[in-house]
Length: 216
Image (cartoon, rainbow, N blue to C red):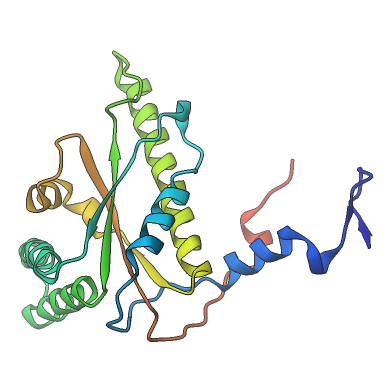
């Protein structure tokens, strides 16, 4: 039995929910290869419902999720994003062979997962301010809220034995993604989560936590 300093609370490490959640967080990996097996609809529904219990600014819950299940829908989005990627990289003056490799890799990642979940932000229910400074802060607060819901989804997927990966590419082309998927005008794509049963195992590391923390 361990006693937390400054409290009279006792913890049994082997039974402590902290240990379970800590293990879940540190064992999660970004999985990019999946088996063709489908994700059961009831499991997907449970993941989405539970992910939305994230904290949010003013409790406005600005997250929105667009789920792509059909092969045609995933391919349509992958082609549209690939064309824009090719155009941007060409404008940058990158070598054509490098560009095509990048486009092919992007297409494979988006079409190779059983499910794509496009994570969006909506400012519809957030506060509005007349000045740019406070409005920018309000938008960032909404983005932070959406990111916490997305993290919930990633952890829940891992807990269910699924693999998932967060891709930021839609943030570079939000209007393109919105038009391609015919999303409501207030839905602002922030990223996409690929989701499915994992077909790979991965290891990862982190810098020492003390490199990123200061105490005052």
